[in-house]
Image (cartoon, rainbow, N blue to C red):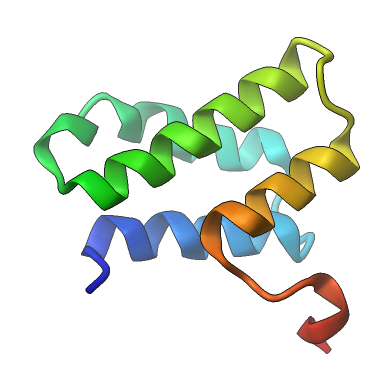
Length: 85
């Protein structure tokens, strides 16, 4: 069962992946949320950690945006963009 915070992370990621918000807007929400991540369940911490690593790799130039998006889709178990229509 997903925690409320896990669902919230997934919802915010879907907004980024669908183009509703920019990566910077997602990060403005996500980074402060990380301060309280220790108070949640392991599954949510793993998701947040994976997202944090993916964004860090992108920010340092180790990933391009397409790779970032693919990694985020995989992290949340979302269908690929072709299925979003």
